[in-house]
Image (cartoon, rainbow, N blue to C red; front, side, top):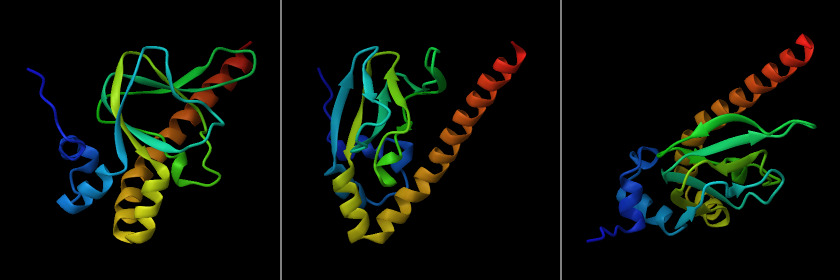
Length: 158
């Protein structure tokens, strides 16, 4: 028998949303849809419109940056429970890197326009989302920086 959960029930099970109250979970669930990807699919591509963010429920996603003349550099691999994408919060709302599925991935996609509207209407929701995304943003920027340092160190060693 298949166990079917509502989006709000799925959110309650995710660490990212644990401290949100019932009413806020319901509001956020209204912006979310279930998504699925195959290995090799892109969740998003650098430069594309950042119109959503994602929470992985199953599978692994590699975050990649491109360097001319090289294979994409994976600067972080994300797993179940991780949030993907913060560019939806920062104008001009364009992705800063690629997110490519390493495995079959199931997750939740949150519509950015819907979320930004809820954040404007209720600043507490905005604060709580920002509080959760700032550590994500910091980790991603550090990961990209470390990959770039490795790239340039390898260049100097040649």
